[in-house]
Length: 76
Image 1 (cartoon, helix red, strand yellow):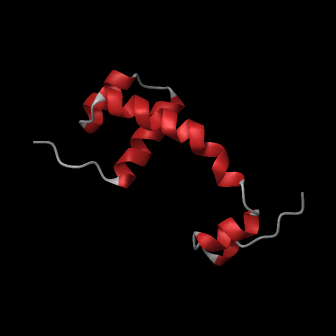
Image 2 (cartoon, one colour):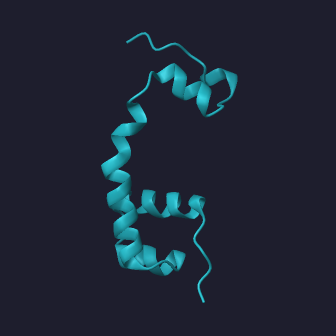
């Protein structure tokens, strides 16, 4: 029986799929993840990617707890 895939592994798998340098089959074999899961995760990621930018950038920086050198003010 396969172990449950961790969120970190899912993120790495999705980023590999988005990069497009490897086929879904190659990623599936490398991470021992079903091809359909990779396709679904990639579609979910791409569909929801814009939600990362819905709030003010300062709020996001503070919410995720980045080091102080990331706490800059957007001057755009």
